[in-house]
Image (cartoon, rainbow, N blue to C red; front, top):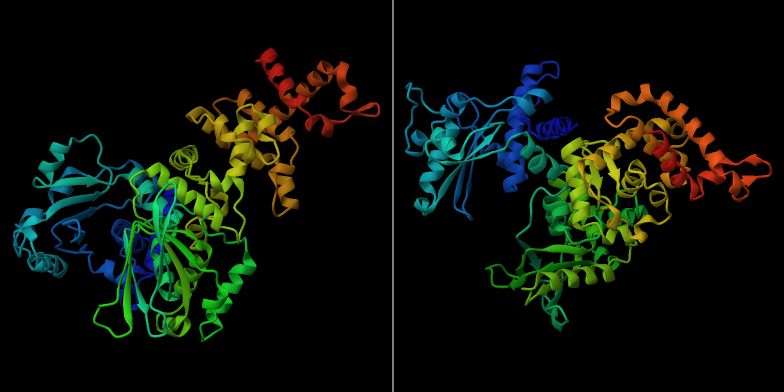
Amino acid sequence: MKYQMLVNILDKIRMGAPANQEKTYKPDPNDIDKINASRARAFIHLFIKVKFGLMEFKERERNITDSSYDGGIDGYYIDKEDRLIYLIQSKFRTTKTNFESKDISYDEILCMDVERILKGESHDEAGNEYNGKIKQLQRELSETDNITKFNYKIIILANLKDIQPARLRKLTDGYNADVFDYTRTYNELVFPVISGTLFTAHDICIPIDLSAKNAGSKISYTVKTKASTCEITVLFVPVLEIAKIMSKYKNSILKYNPRSYLEFQGQAVNASIRKTVIDNNTNEFALYNNGITMISDDTSINERIGQKNKAQLSIKNPQIINGGQTSYILSRIYEETQLDKLEETFNEKEVLLKIITLIDNDNDENKLKLIEAVSEATNKQTPVINADKFANEPIHQKIQRTLFDNFGLLYERKRGEFADGLNFGYINSDQVIERNFFLRIYFAANGEINLGSQKKLFQKNPESKLKIDDEKINNFYIGHHLFDELTKKLRNRRQHLNIKKIDKSYSGKIYLYNILFPNSKIHDIKNNINTLEDKWVEFMKFALKENENIKRLWIGGTNFNEDKYYNSEHLEKDLHLYIKNNF
């Protein structure tokens, strides 16, 4: 499942190649060898995109050296800010089994001519001249200021097990190496793309047009709160710049926002935003939209940039806490618009931006409390439900990591966080586990049937009942697939199945199944269904006998009423007693 996500992402990268690269990245679909070669090259693209924030295909391709006579170096990146030079060696495996189990050989690492290339040699030891991209790397290194202060790091995109760091340095001419095996690839390259958190914003700059701002470029106001002294800066900024920022940083700039992008909620608002931007050549957007609120660690505006009526806004560690929905819609418009049409679409349109700069923010706990309070107070356009407030709690982050690591499932702790993955076709909706669904199946699978069936579950503080371990998570995984099998006929009749409206017999069967078949695999479920149903009939006879003296509470007339029984508190108690007596 995770490997297929990776392949989907690589194919999307390939399809982004410009016309002059189509032969390399878009070969005949029937030529599997060439398809695999193009995916291998796209794998290097993925690393550079996620780790260094190079979003454009052309700028990444420039740093890919993989070809004949490349000295064993497949790509590079010169990080001038951190003074690090990255040299990349990649081995993409074309099947899930090989990708997750096959190691790169020591000989392949030894084939990297790191020392020769960095010393400016033009030929390898066999006398072959290095290719043009390697010479480009050498030229860029020679033109880099203060190159003596830079460090080097070898990146190995492949599995390399059971090797000590000292041994690895010997293989890489003494340079430090960082290995991205299949686990790191899934966690640090694939998951960030799917969840829209691939690149964190540290400092952003927004150009400002001063020509229409008669009263100055901004309004500033200092506010003292219990948590921090804040400076509030309010100004209008170009809609296009917000769209670019959101397109690049996605959910990583919505860390403190209680929601991610809500694709299918607030559709009237989304449509209105689109219409105001696309259908108008004038700046109605500045009037109609409530604006965007950002948190910042440091904010400055420079009006002396050598351009008339222009200024530059600088924001350190920005986070959008209100207006995320607006920003995401703008980014979608930006991504869907042809390059030569951007100016026409976004021309002179601006949006109100409020920046809250936390001046004395040394106390992280107080800072977070203030951010959460402001976020809750300002997010009124699309209601913040109770579960949104707990989305960033460590327990939900742990659930997300565990489900992805163990099963390749995507726990949606924040509503809308996988919108990009769905929109671009990296994943399908069956791989996304809605948090309310998770809790109900999790509790049912582990015997807490009444708790999992409660209405408004997130208002009952269910986090306190969550004890995440491998056994309980595996029980959920089996329960999830069993629920799909048990409700198949219902789902065929209804497009959307609301688990809250399913009676507790399904929850009881999920728990009983895990007791009957503790080491079951998902492919065993169909074969075990009949045994489960037989045991359920046996249990119901036991329950009827056990509750003979109180059946007036839940029978209709003189006949046993199953629906009333399932909705009562008795089912969980009886099922635990039945299991205790029989297993």
